[in-house]
Image 1: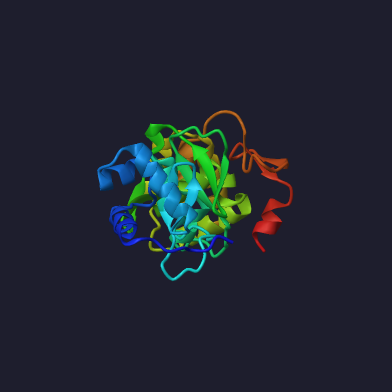
Image 2: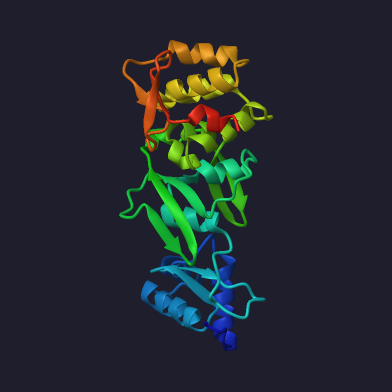
Length: 270
């Protein structure tokens, strides 16, 4: 356990100046600008403050402050979303993390889902006990986002409709198709419900398998969504897709050109 040590008056003043300008994390470049010193000197100071427990290192070259009331620097990240913005920008918080943010699911997920235009070497990154699960998309897919503020940090999160679209595009982003179905039901029964926007977003994304999944789920579990079902039928493409590519399927829903996982309908109705 790393205990927090004392600082001299001058060092404390310099640290305070850096912290006042911190936005989701502190890099040597940030400290260099704040203190008007060279980056090598800034890096040395950050390392020194980290060794004394006033900062905690997230990864090489990025630190976050330790809360004043803490007796130790061995802490999980205070705000994973703000740190994600620093680590993976351009990015947005999506999938299960966004669904929970909008109240579309009550499930608790231990990791944070981040959609980024970067191509990191690892798809699962751990920082100070926080796990980030990463998905890479092209710049054209960066739409349907809402900016929110986490302290001083502006973070993008997929809006409710884009969140549902992402889950239909890649069910694994919601923890699998059964959870995606629950989130879709919540969305259609919520204040966020906007079938026309959902179809427009899906057109913009360009994955026709989305219409097969959405049409099948709506026709099976929300048959009153007649206009939505009709719009999906208009957009069916040739070939068969999987309702959930991660699950083995044993039945073809020919009307939707969709392979259905074994026992899906019975489990989904429970």
